[in-house]
Amino acid sequence: MLTFVLLGMLWKSPRLTAPPPRAPLPGWWVALLRGVTTAAALAVIVIGVVGPPETADNLAPWAFYVTFWVGLVPASLLLGPVWRVLNPLRAVHAGVAWALRVDPERGVRDLPVRVGLWPAAVALFAFGWLELAAPEPADPRLVAACLTGYAVVQVGAATVFGRDWFAHGDGFEVWSTLLGSLSPLPRRNPLAGLEAVRPQPGLAAVVLVLLGTTAFDGLSRSALWTTRSVLWATIGLVGVTAAVVALWLLGTWRADPVRGDERAPLPVAFAHTLVPIAAGYAVAHYFSLLVFDGQKVVALLSDPFGTGADLLGTADRAVDYTVVGVGAIAAVQLTAIVLGHVVAAVAAHERAVRLFPPRVALRIQYPVLASMVVLTCAAVALVLAP
Image (cartoon, rainbow, N blue to C red; front, side, top):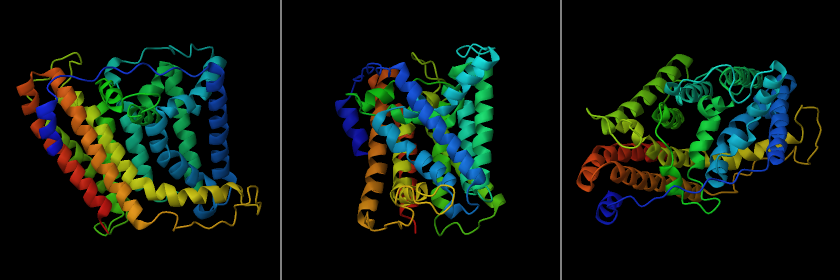
């Protein structure tokens, strides 16, 4: 609330300018990096299929859920949209398009504009269900099968619609790109990067799905959630996500759409302001997981196929739970959530003063701010819940 009051007093007109475009990496660097990640992805799938059947001994689920999914957040926040550069699906698509004599840029038909980011929202919700509601989400064989199926669907769609599909349909790349808008590198204002996120169909859905699935993950790990059945987990996941969506619509819905350069209704025009809240919640929720379970990945790398090898000399290394104290974890969690809320409030104010005269801009933010406060308080409650 204090942030909102100060913004109303001191920030009466737009102040953020579009950041300069990021200098692209040389083509050979991109090819090299994608070659490495493609080889790593294939190795994870192979290990998932032929490696040890027990989750604790198989590298695949740990590499997928911890190194990739959890590690994607800090990597993108720090370095920018890293998965757009590293995405092995883009490398596979280039090869498939070449083999089929299909233009990799255009595909065989145009992607309708109204599709927007909706495919990415669907992909992220499907991943959320796999992680939080599937019977054995960490089963190595299931992880390998899901990765293979996801690759087939994504590369197939890109072959039809062209390589731009990945910026609309690959949920992981879309999430990394949104997080990357907050990156301070190279010499960028994270707030200006966030303001540069343009409203488009499905943008709000992507961020709301991420908030909903992360919120349910926190709820399901607490003492408040006692059932572990697939049915109730699915109902809980859908219910929590629907509640987050309803809260956001309640705070942003208007009878008349917002008219500005974006020509988008309020739920979409302000959807980018949810990105720092989602990022803060993700850091708070997964920080300890990355610190502790990330050590397990290092140990399993020494013996990826369960043959008794010790390639890196780390096969017998146990997880050190003293590397970060409880107090430090709590400090990181609360800092991430509060900082995410503050950045979201500033981003919302900047967008409001761009679209409305000063008095209208303040009034239009009251329900938006209320929604943000509720989301932030819920995040704190779930992170601190026993």
